[in-house]
Image (cartoon, rainbow, N blue to C red; front, side):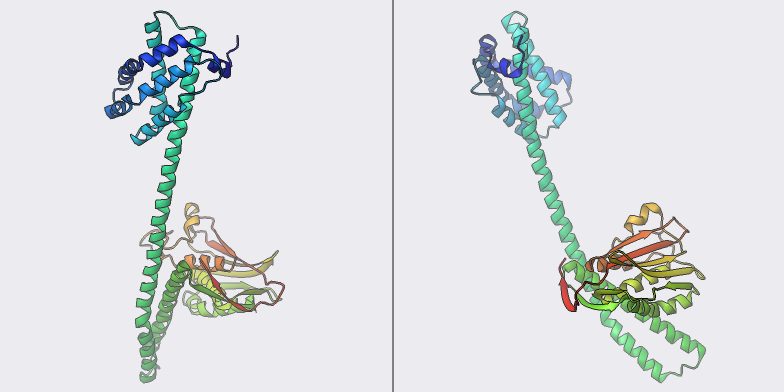
Length: 404
C-alpha cells in the first residue's frame, strides 16, 4: 500500500471533497463549539474574526481532494491568510497550532457523520496531509510577520539608543564646557594669591598646595568629560608620532607622584632597558597610564602597594598596573569600563563618576589596542593590562582623525 504523501495528494477523494465544499460553514460551526469547549478562556474575538475566512479554506481542501493527479490548487494560500490574520489578532503560535488540531478533529468527525460511515484510512490520511500543509503554510506566514515585527522593534530600539547616546554626548560636552569656564579664573586667582600671600606659614603653604592639586584634578576630570564627548561624536583626533613608551610612562608617574606620596603608597616600576617604540598619541598614552595609576591610588588604602610593568609580547607593548587595594567582585569585572558604572558599594567613599576607566578603554581602542581587568575578588587587589601595537616598520608622523 503506497501511503507516500505525493501519492495521497494525487489520489482523488471526490465524495469527501464534495462534502467539504458543500458544508464548509457547518464544519466551521462545529469547530468553533469544540474550540470554545477545549479552551473557553480564549478571546471570542478570535473566533469571530476567523469565521468568515475558514469556510474558504475548507472549500479549498475539498477542491484539492476532488482532483486526480498532481493537485492544481492547494489550500496553502488560504492557510497563509489565516496565519496572517491570527498574527494580527494577537494569537500565540501555540494557539494557532492547537486550533488547527481541533479543526482536524472537527472536520473528520463531521465527515463521518455526513457520510454515515467510518472514514477509510486513505481518506483520513489524505485529509490529514492537506491539514498538515495548511499548518505549515500558516505557521510560515505567522513567523514571517513575527520576525518582521521583531526587526521593526529592534530597529526602533536601536534608534532610541542611538538618540540617547547622542543626547548623552551632548550633555557631557555641555557639562564639560560649563565646568571648564570657572576653572581658568580659579587657577589665575590661585597664582595671584601665591604672589600676594606669605606662604612661609605651614598652614598657608598647605592650603595653597591643596588648592593647586585639587584644581588640577578638577581640570583633568573636565578634560576627561570633554574627551568622552568628542569620541562619542566622532570628533576625536589622535596626533600620531613615534616615541619610546618609557617616556610616556615616566611622565604619567610624575603626574601621580603627589597622590602616591600623600597616601604613602609603595610604588614599584619595572621598565625594560631597551626602548619600546610605538606609533601613537604621546599625550593620550600618558593620559591612559596616568588614569590607570590614579585609579590604583584611589582604590588602594594608605600604605598600600602599586606596581607598573612594561614589556613586549609578540607585536604588542604590554603595560600592566597592579595594586593590592579593595579589588573587584567577579560579577562586576565586565562592567568596570562602562561609562558611569558603579562597581563598589554606594557611599563607600570609593566610587567616583565612572569616567576614568571608560575613557581609558576608548583611548586604547582608538589606538587599535585592547585593555582587560582582572581581580581575585574583594580585598585582593586588581590588575589592568593595556596592549598597544608596536611601531610600524616605516616611519609614521601624521595627524589622524578617528571616526566613531
